[in-house]
Amino acid sequence: MNGVLNIDFEVFFYMVVGLFGLVGFFRGWWKEAITTGLLVFLLIMLKYPALAATIIERINGIIDLVRASDAIRAAGAITPPATVDPGQSQFYIILLIVLVLASYFIGKMGVGDAAVTAGGRLFGGILGFTNGFIILSLLREYVLRRFLPDSGISAASVTPNNITMTITNVPQTSITDGLTIWLLIIGGGLLFLSTLGTRFKFKKGSVTKQPPPGYRKA
Image (cartoon, rainbow, N blue to C red; front, side, top):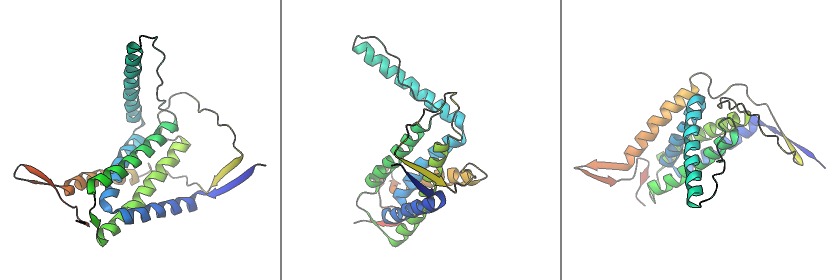
C-alpha cells in the first residue's frame, strides 16, 4: 500500500533553520563562522554557473589523470573515466554535505576545548540560523536544478518508492534574487577571514593561538 506524505516547505524550512540556530547556540560563533565561509564557496558557484562548470572540468581532468595512472601501473587497458556531470544535482548535494561536515571538524580542531561565553553563544545562534537558511536554500536550488550548468543530458529517471513525498508551498523566489546572495557572499567571506584572524596572534615574528572573542580557556 502506497502512502502520500505531504510536507509544507515553509513549515519544514523554519523548523530546520531553527534547529541549526540551536546547534549554533551551543557551538559558538567561531565554529559557525567557519561553516559560513565554506558555504560562501557554494553560493559563488550557484551565482556563476560558468565558474562551477570550469571547476568541475578541472575535477574531471584530475579524475582522468588518476584513472590513467592507475591503469598504467596495472598495465591494463585504460577504461573510460568516471566523470562528474556539471548539470546534475547529486554532485552539488554531496559537495554541500562534505563541506558542512568538514567545517564541523575544522571548527572543533580550531577552537579545541575553549569554553563559549554567553555572547559567543548568542552570536553563534544567529550564525546558525543564517547557515541553516543558506543550506536549505542551496538544497532547494539543487533539487530544482536551477542555476546549474546545462550539460545537455536529461536527468536520470527515478525509481518510484512506496511513499510519495509531496512538498507544497515552495516559494517562487530564489536565493540568487536581488542583493541577498551578495550580502551572504561578501558578508560571509569577510566574516570567514576575520574569524581566522581572531584565532591566531602575530607578535615579533611568532604565531601563537588564542581563544577568539566569545570563548575562554577551559
